[in-house]
Amino acid sequence: MNDSDETKFDEKLSRLAATLPTQVSPDRDLWPAIEQAINTRTNTIWNTPWAQAAAVVLLVAGSSGITYVAVRDDGPVSPVVIDTANVFETVSGDFGRRYTLGNEYLDAHSELQNKLDEKLQFLSPEAREAVTKNLQTIRAAIKDINQALAAEPDNMLLQELLLSAYHGEISLMRKVDGIANSAMRRNDI
Amino acid sequence: MDAILATGTQGMTRERMLVTQQISSEAALVERAQRADSAAFEALYRMHIDKVYGLCLRMTGNAAEAEDCAQDAFIQAWNKLDKFRGDSAFGTWMHRVAVNTVLGRMRKSKREHDRIQAVSDVMNAPDSIGDSSSIQDLEEAINNLPRGARHVFVLHAVYGYSHDETGGMLGIAAGTSKAQLHRAKRLLVQLLDKDE
Image (tube, rainbow over all chains, first blue to last red):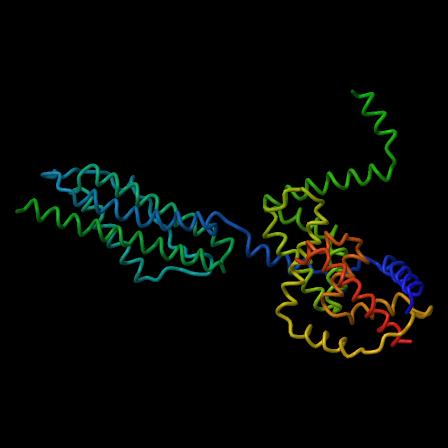
């Protein structure tokens, strides 16, 4: 091919290429699949990295804070009568839309709740306040996660967060039970 | 001020006004989509799917693969919407996302290797291109180009991107883009002549 032929070919090719349609409709509507994909990935407050980190920090810091405040030796502790019914709101047994909490868990939770109501009287005002605040925070989180799970029942992260929050709640209640027993023993001595 | 606006509006052609309206409505849709409004994103999808699918089809040379690429490109775009600053038109940005999606998928595809082998078997170059070459022949020939040459040819010759822009999209130097275009043309001569 000489230079002249090559130039002619280039021109013809360029002309033909420029006439090729740049917009082509796909045979099927791709939107339903895209919509499904983006809806399952839509960021909620609970699956953003900072929210996950915050949830973990909340649980760890909450239980550590309770332990610190409660085990401090603040001298004799006087029993105080408090209206626990107004302090704690009973957590619903939801576990997303598809799940329910087992009877075993609900029984244990109920038993711990009763013990907590009793044992709170033996804690110092500071410890009581800390326990109350942290339990309220965890229970508010449980409520929020349950609501989010109702919208996204298949979201594994939400399920894990919810499970973790339930564990955190039980762990905190058990801790308070143990600490109150310990405080009573110290007082007895 | 109103008089200036009125004069400006009168001076503006109907086509320009429509384009301006489209750009401003597109910007509003992008803004809403960035706030996770999927209905706004669907509207953007409807506006751009044909361009994105067309690009994917030309780059992959396969309708089913192009559908998957276009679908992935819009999902990628949704996930990266917060990175879209409006420096370029949404359609241009979407093209870039689509090109990246195609390249990403092709890196994983073994079929592409087979395609390159098939094209490298074409040995003898003819002296000229026949007059009977039609658009259909060209489409088929482009589909048979090896990946690098095809991508450059599609972006530069079909979609009109400069070598700098083509190189930027494909992650290659502008000089490489020129070389690939030259290679694409040489191969197209061979492929088109073989078809005759």
